[in-house]
Image 1 (tube, one colour):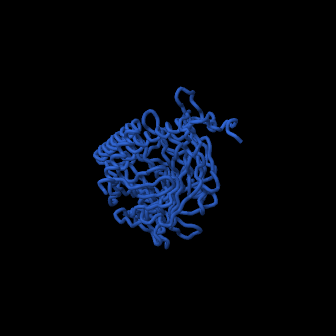
Image 2 (image 1 turned 90 degrees about the horizontal axis):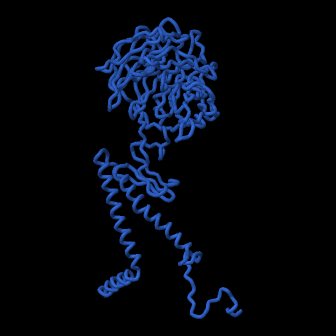
Image 3 (image 1 turned 90 degrees about the vertical axis):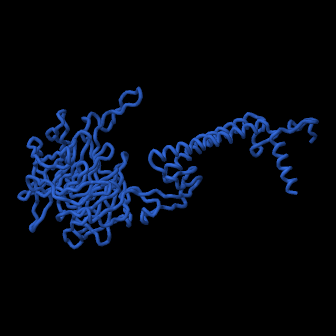
Length: 503
């Protein structure tokens, strides 16, 4: 049909509007102007913000992410991880090696590890045949290289094995434990490091801090305002559910023990650690034998205050006194150990719980497991990587584990044949991130990793240089855009001369 009555028809001499973005927008309309303004804003952020930021971290960091690395398809890890999966799962240990310099002077069985300042103590234990509790205390110095050789420390006034030990408010405590004549005691000994040497040179019995009942193999953990002792065995050698806390008083001394909410089930020879606002108890024995369940006790905390809002109280804790345990939770079934084990080494570091060695159904195992609890769900999974297990010939039962600097150290215990071993094993805890990764919309590349004040200053110079260069580039782009016709003519002239000279 003729175009005179068609609204889309153009009159004589009319010029059709130019369309952009696949014909979706009018080149002279507000829509295209808005798109261009957004694009230019992103370019400015990229040139004057993101690129200088990456220039700084390329100088001071070992690796830097460029773009948005959503899903890494290619991963290359440094040799320091010694063959662990790449990237290594959080909590994994770099393969164990012998650490003869940290070998204990005795059997290293049934004692307790206590870190006090720059010294590590192995307190008590058993020796002889039949095995009886001893007063022996061994001490090693913690330095940049790890542990020094062990030497004899100041002996306990009485023999102790399976005691609960803790270092709190500048003092070391040895709580309960079995003696050479009874399976459990209620005594508490305290040792104060010397101001000059840092060594504990005397142990004093604190009758005012005696436990409400005798305990051996109790779990212990330090909280912000005191010490909590959980479970353990009584004189009848049966696991208990008791939980006691000694709170730090205004005088700077611990006050007598106060009873907290009991454990949901009896537990002895377990480990306890504070992660967030909860106490976790794992491993050890319950009334039926080796226990698989990891339990969590939630601590009542002060109401949260945000800005000018009124304090917000956790509704679950109700009116529970601040610092008390208001609830015990066993967590999901997936949070239990895959198999209960007896005599495992138990320790925690950086919010991660570890289980190493021990026996499963009477057979020694070399497997190592770890779990990282989270506030919402507690322990949901125990992880194991074959290369993080103890050496095939290094199964340990009744050993003690501790993290010193960048290494986990396993001390003492008995081997798979039941022979007592004072030997030490060491595994690295400082996992290295992948040095190169390629994923969707980004990649990770190696950086210079310049450390210290010098590296920081060079990083600032790199960022400033990138910013200045990008600003000059953007300024030139703005001038060229504002003088588009003259810029096109200048470029054309330059290209024309080049072409002419080429001919």
